[in-house]
Image (cartoon, rainbow, N blue to C red; front, side, top):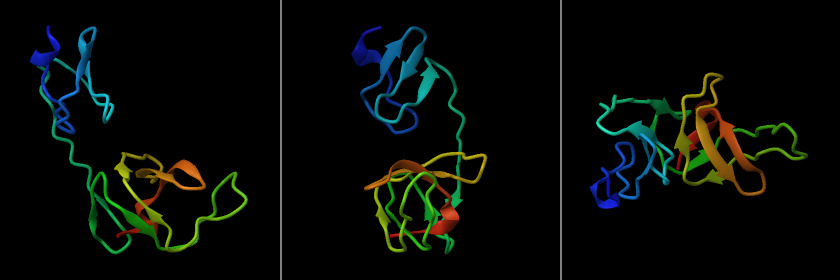
Length: 115
């Protein structure tokens, strides 16, 4: 199958998908699926501390000082986090993000508000 015949990613609509054996992979969001496989609509509904609906790519602000395991300082109120990614965190940590000075981490949506 030529690269031009590959479908766009069903999750993020990226045109840069590529084939790896039987699987199709999106390099932008990491989604993997089989050619012709029906895509189940997963609606992950995540709300912030004040009830606003969050989406991938949103910017949020921390509403409470948070202690960070393994770090000498805490994440302060008002810290702005850009480009969040929503995940299905079994332990309640449903936001995947990168924070300057701390690196990649997961946060609970109850401690942030949409910016």
